[in-house]
Length: 342
Image (tube, rainbow, N blue to C red; front, side, top):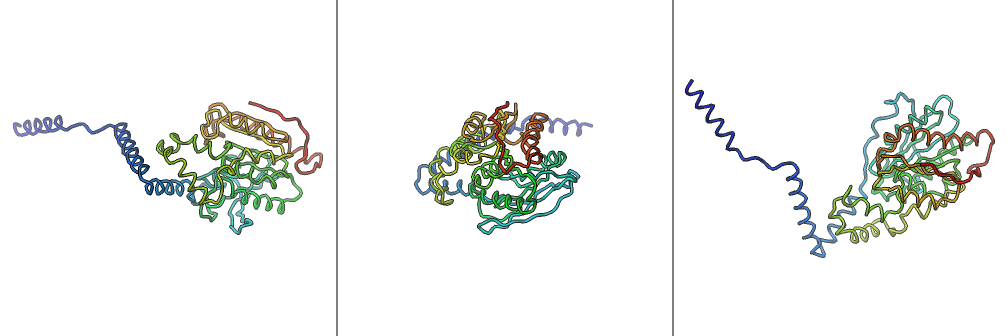
């Protein structure tokens, strides 16, 4: 018993003598401090600055290829695999979900770092309402090949290829496009093709790339990115062979006219703020609507929107696509006065 008692005492003394480790918050502060020091050292050297800017640029434009999961089967939907080719020779892979009584087709375009599975909740909603849904992986995303993303600019070629496919496969039915973030930007950059649609839905659309990059520093991107902002822009422009000012959906959204446009964004979206949506709305030249989803951020528009999102989306499509079926109007027709909802 004495031995056990001493052992117990020894264990207690050992336990109380152990120093407490750093907290999780303290470890994070230390890690952040180390990164700041390394960033300062890199910025102090011309070679280090350029090397860091190049690394950040590569990271921002990196491919995001992975098989789309889940598939429409998870929602109890039947689907077929599709493939189309862009004008610059890239084969894109996608799905088509066709309900029993499809009266129109909606082409859906996902955001950056995602794939066509990002649109699955929207596909389920639209298919239940009688809309055929076509969703493809953008270049360098999902199962589609490609070396890099261009934030929607060259992805406009993907939009054009998908819309051509839809027109060829279902030539006598009205058509619409729904873009999410980068996908919405790509639709704007493909305005020459999208303007012939009966309806266009743009979700969480950024105003221009310069402002959206600034909005994400300290939020999605580390705060030290700010020190390399000019270098990252300089390197990225040369890698993509584009000027930053060219990557601005605000300069292309007017080209969607006469197609009616619905802008959807969240009031808490720091990447594509509500005030930017208002500025985009003002640049539209055809029938247009703006719906703000209270409490929604950049990635949860459908979940946070609930009934409001459902009614806004289906109401807009029903007004423009169903009307086309009933009156046999030409593509892009309709002369409703611009309206706003929030």
